[in-house]
Image 1 (cartoon, rainbow, N blue to C red):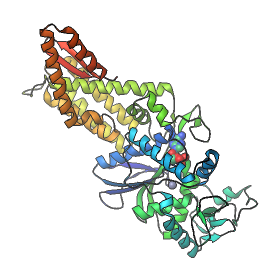
Image 2 (cartoon, rainbow, N blue to C red; image 1 turned 180 degrees about the vertical axis):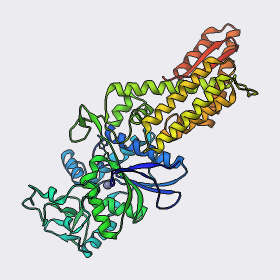
Image 3 (cartoon, rainbow, N blue to C red; image 1 turned 30 degrees about the vertical axis):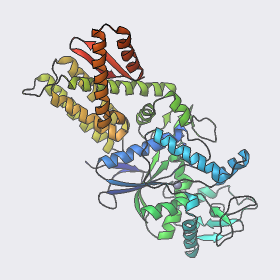
Image 4 (cartoon, rainbow, N blue to C red; image 1 turned 90 degrees about the horizontal axis):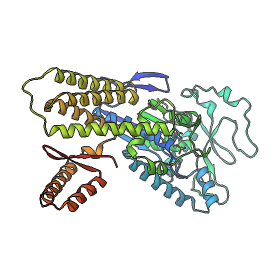
Length: 476
Ligand code: AMP
Ligand code: ZN
């Protein structure tokens, strides 16, 4: 089945056809590193992580780049407030961002280009725009002349005439028209600066993404994404710069995530209503946060509430329970020589759930619907296990394989499925169970109980059944 993507450029779902067969080149705008990353950012980056994972799962080679804005007005302002060097400040928060993404199990981008390491590329790009007549030098910087680019507004559907209503060039600004935007900013005293044909200064914000994305992904590529606040002006300006420079279409599919909201407002650094990823991770497992995000379609707004997170926590627990039920049942499962009604029913539920999962993901990465299918399979397997005494290995394996797919695409249960680790652990747990049984035989109950209790603290619960001792993983 083909994947359909909602393209912000056309405001429609379109069949996804990458420019090069079998390969997807995607660029996601990265953070401005001047503060801790919050759950609003996490919403966007987890959404794109799952999009990327699904494309990989479908067999595409994905080349993904994400920029770091490691110099800009906000960084300079914050550094002045705290008395830090802007470079060191950016370095610190860039490192924290990578740590936070790792903790959230977001796969790293293939390339993380940083502005300060691409100044010469940016200067070359601005020079080209100037040569082609789209850019001009003013007293305080170099500007892009918006009216020269005929397609301006094609992404955001904003008309230049609307834009300039009531707007004016502020005193001291060196631009010709209010709608023009900076490509290069000349340095004021004390600001970080680099040499350029227009004197010392630093790049404007939008130009970095045009320069670095085309450098690494080519003059045309497949997907460009970010939060919906970036549609205007950031992405609109990126299109103007890049297409003015190359003279042809740049990005095929524009994808934008809905906001994470707090009491009706966007979670943002400037409003101060944010919860950092670090704070959230003190209270919730990273997989709870992932599931919380995936419970909504990526384009819909998502409310940050305790109930929403608790709901995700319970859902995750339910799924882990099912996995444990399957794993434990595998030990008493038998090869099938015949199927009864229960097997047919369970098989059909798994088959239908799996199809629903793929259909939902193919339909513009609808993780909310896909998750419903996961629960349908989960419920069907649990029902099956209560119905039969000796489950059939083939049914359990089908369910197991489905959950493996969910794991790969959603980035949850990954540790659980790491077989080698599980194999080693399993052998050690079995050994401890044997030792405990021996201790009990020798009536050394204190030591035996110590083994049971300590294992429980590690998330391994022993259960004594008439058939012997079995173990289960529990969430602690
Ligand atoms: P920034 O560092 O503010 O440029 O943001 C980095 C990325 O996170 C951008 O793609 C933003 O659109 C996205 N983002 C910021 N706040 C939110 C939010 N509350 N909900 C969803 N995405 C957000
Ligand atoms: Zn960008």
